[in-house]
Amino acid sequence: MKWSKPALGLVALGAATTFALAGCSGGGQTASAGAEGGDGGYDIAFVQGVAGDEFYISMQCGIQDAAEAAGATVQVQGPEKFDPTLQKPIVDAVVASKPDALLIAPTDVTAMQAPIQAAADAGIKVVLVDTTLDDPSMAVSQIASDNEGGGAAAFEAIQAAHPEGGKVLVVSIDPGISTSDARAEGFEAAVAEDSKFESLGIEYSHNEPAEAARIVTAALQAHPDIVGIFAANLFAAEGTATGIQQAGKQGAVTVVGFDAGPAQVEALKNDVVQALVAQEPATIGQDGVAQALAALDGDTPEEKIQTGFTVITKDNLDGEGKDAVYRSSC
Ligand code: T6T
Image (spheres, rainbow, N blue to C red):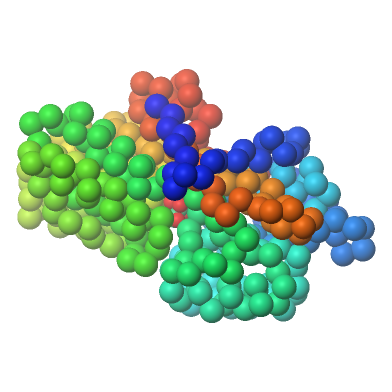
């Protein structure tokens, strides 16, 4: 099922309307498309939330496609972990290199505030892609999925599988990440509306699959009657799947994971996970480039853009679900 819901009274702007898409041109830490620095195109830096994450790789593909079509250069870097202490030095170095625009997924709403403000103060056009900040006013645009809606949709999948109700758990990343916080809020708000369900709360896996697996193992020992687990991102879902398998609970517990990398799709095929909420990372990236270019060209960028999501199940995996699966390289 595909959901595309403009929120906050703002209309989603598809960058596909602005750019003719070209093929992806690389998948390394630094990749380029088009030319600036001498050839006249703009120089765009993309700082991922974490390197090697298929969500950000797919976003990178969208950014590179859009940049290539516009004759711009793209540099891509990401920290080894989803951690502001590792992301900050990357941003500092990017600011020193003076790109025209910075597309960034901040790893913390508070800790990344000052480094990103420094980018804007240096005259770099900042676009927040995926995650945001406590005060995003320095950004020319913010682009993110309907994370709250995706969390609610995750609960609906559990609710449909267990109309009798029961205990549910959220496995998230860390508090202070705008996306996963919104997903958990959307999930918890939907749970609160159905008195047959009891929330066991939100546990934090620090983006480590092993920690997510440990959380799930412990939760299933303490509450063998859990009926549903919502894993709020790719790595939480990976670890949750491991925990479910180790406990021999596949099928008995309905697992819904946010994101749809190849490993999550494999878990869906193997009946360890029952649904995936797939974002549109390439669209977020394309829209990010479009908004950065609008700002650089003196046009008025869209302040906020909300992108949709697709709920992938075994039933639609060969249909619309297939196109929603993330890429491992461009
Ligand atoms: O879920 C995505 C992203 O939206 C989130 O902000 C962090 O985790 C992911 O990158 C998936 O690992």
